[in-house]
Structure formats: C-alpha cells, structure tokens
Image (cartoon, rainbow, N blue to C red; front, side, top):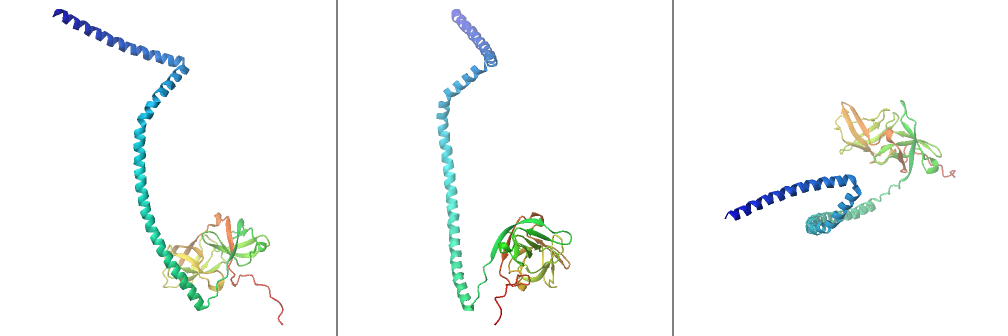
Length: 290
C-alpha cells in the first residue's frame, strides 16, 4: 500500500516537472523564433509561405461547403428578384399595348380630321447648331454672338434655343456670324401663354436676369411655378416653345425665370420655322410683273 502511494506521488511530481519543462520550452521556443525572425527574415518568410501552402488545401476543402451555400442563397434571391421583375414587365407590357392601341386609334382619327379640314401642313423647321463666342451685352443690352451666319442658312428673325428652352432671336446676320437678341433684353417683346389656363400676355425684358409679363388680365390667376410658352401670335415665334417659369408674383409684377442662364451659354440651336413675322428676312422678288 505504501509502495503504491509512493508511486503515485512520484508520478505526480514527474507530471508537474514535465508541465514546467513544457512551459519553459514553449517560452524558450518563442524567444528563439523571435530571435530568428529578427536575425533571418527571409527564412521566417519562407517558413510562413510553406506553412500557408501546406494548409491551403485544407482551407479550400473547408470553404467549399460555405461557398456552395452562399451561391445557393444568391441564386434563390436572384430567382425571386427575376420573378418580381417579370411580373412588373408583364404589367408594363400590358399598359404599353393599351397605349399603343389608343395612339393608333388617335393617329387614324387625326389623319381623317386633317383630310376633312383640308389642313395645310406646317413647314418643316430647318436648324443649325452654333457656338456662343462673344457676349456683347452690358448694362443697356443683352445679346450674344454665335458662329453661324447667312452662309450656314441663318437669317434675321430665326429662333435661337438651347435644349431647355427659348434664348432669343437673330437680329443681325453676317456671312459667318450673327447677333442674337436675348429674351432678357429691354427691346425684346414676345407673346406668351401662361399656365395651364392658357392666359395670354407679353413677355418683356428689362436687361435684368428675369423678364416680366405685361398685359396680364386683372382676373388672371398667376402663381409661381406656372410654365410660360410662346403663343404664336404675330408669327414671330411658333406656338408652344418653352420660355421659363413664373418665379415671383408681387402685386402687378410677374417675374419669369428663363430656362437658360446667360453666363452658361455655350452652344445654341438656330431654327428657321419659315414664319413671316416682322423680323423675318423678306424673300427676294420673283421677277418683274408683266
């Protein structure tokens, strides 16, 4: 019995000694690795790469189930999104087919009414694009120079626009250049239509940033945000050209914010609508009367 107890005690002491030795060995190994890392970085780097290469197949095998699950989840989500998108496309297709049917019916009706009224078709508008190269405006004038003239088909009275709306009209045209009177110039007078009610007025410039409306009826309701377009009166401009929006209404003063900014004008489109307004260049006589 005493011999057994002595063996257990010796085994316990040996176990404790081994644990201490292992602990000390680990500490020594750590310091050794640190010293090796400081002394020979190339060796440590190669060892790290070798270990990484050795365990990479294991990581690849372990990651395959996770990747497969992620792909499956992504496919399920994509399938659900495709089904939802397909349902929306069906609805959109149905609405488009309905609008197509309405458009075709209106087109047939429009052709029939034009034939019934013997309507003369409007002339095709011709246009050229030009670049703004000079601002000849100042305190008493609002005009710009463009790189297009009579040699390009530009004539006096042509309409000048940007992609957003009306800029003005050609006042003088040379062979390779032209001067454009802006709608903000004090000499500019444009018949316009205001708002959805179609109230008529005259847009006049005051050499400022915002032209004003004149001859607005006393009972006419004009609110900020109303769209302003040309009315086509006097055949100076065709009807429906966008001009701007009502910016401020104070008593009888109605200010309009144009769709263009004078200091940002770079390119414009000069359009000849074939109008016989007061600014249009008169056509030469066909010949002496007999």
